[in-house]
Length: 289
Image: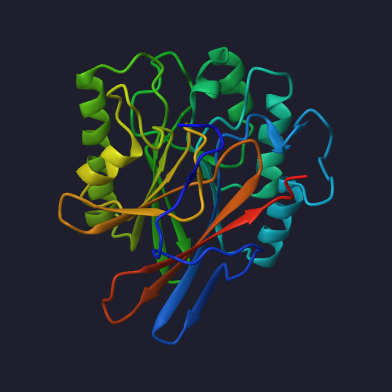
């Protein structure tokens, strides 16, 4: 997948720029929830302005955009799909800034897992957000990662499960285990935790040509996941793509590019009459200058 590739599913949802929509609002027979998401930030909230620059505050930086979004919509959910750090200095500052911004949960990418385990563990133990991974991400990593987290927003219970990058080359059996674990915890969220909506926060990548499992495979093989927010492949998606799961139900996949170029936004409308939730997605794009 090219670094600046754009994926578009024509007619699925409307694209808009600018932060609009509620964090959590009830409208009589319906309720709307906003989810903001990033991925593959690579220690950077403003393209080439990295986290070791104190308090990134350049005009229209992603840091400032997220800060404003959280102020306007405090009941929203803010997620990152991995590779928020990199091998450069300043990863501790990046994690601190993500905590300041009010990130709710992250999963781990290859960049995080490539760091020295004690260093990564020490930094993440200071984070205020949840670290989620339902798959095997390394036996020597003391991260206290959880497979999932349930977030209460008004009357809604939202379940978020994490699928991090593997710390070893994926073999066929390991890939099947990822699918099995994701389906197991999605079922648990639906049937035991009784959540209204299941989000899979994935660092599998949008698609691969070498046989590795991807978000496309996850969507097709899932049963209880409603939305996949992904990373790893640096895929810029103008709109989500919709695929049918094993039960024939439509599942959305959404990525937000890389390097802090945009903030993804997904407004989810829930209805009290039993209709399936509806998605309206937007990319809050920074200036490309």
